[in-house]
Image (cartoon, rainbow, N blue to C red; front, side):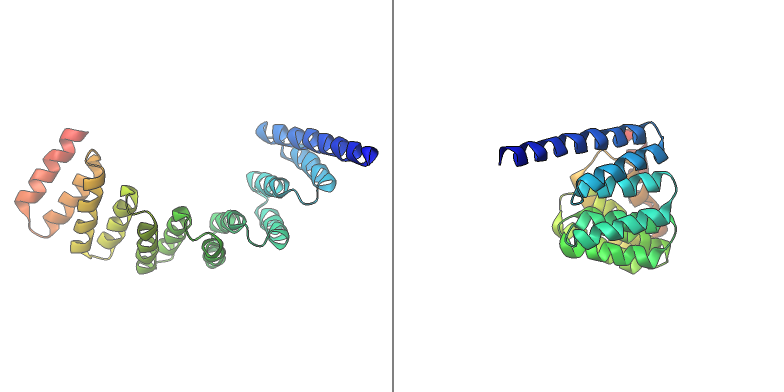
Length: 215
């Protein structure tokens, strides 16, 4: 039993030594050498989630995007309930403009962690890229339901409402964002722009002045 325990400790020590060498090589931008060390680390600890993530990350940094996706897929097979793996995979798909696959991966990330508003935000960005502005708004609705005190969420949803010419909804969102963060000049500038469109000259002038005073 003692020898078995000592062997496991030695194996852990070697794993962390090799893994850390891989991370150091990654930080130096020496990606092939980083991968060599990380693959060796994975062979020592085949269930190391952080090593899977590191290998995929290094492949992405080295612009080996399909290899990164492949490794996230392999990691997901071993850790099928890890929401971050799906989100990381989605981001690689976004990078190579495979938007449908990115949305599908974010769907899975949200399925396993529906409280992470970033997943809704990232999925909304992709939907906006492909012209699904209402879908982006819906995602921000979900994010706001989870975190109703984050002014950024109202700020971005207001922009999407503005894009769809939902001016009243946009103004309502800017009102809420301003109530949560009254020192962001951009919020007043954008609200003033919409008020200008709606012919609310006095309100627009006041907001433009407020925006200038906060710069």
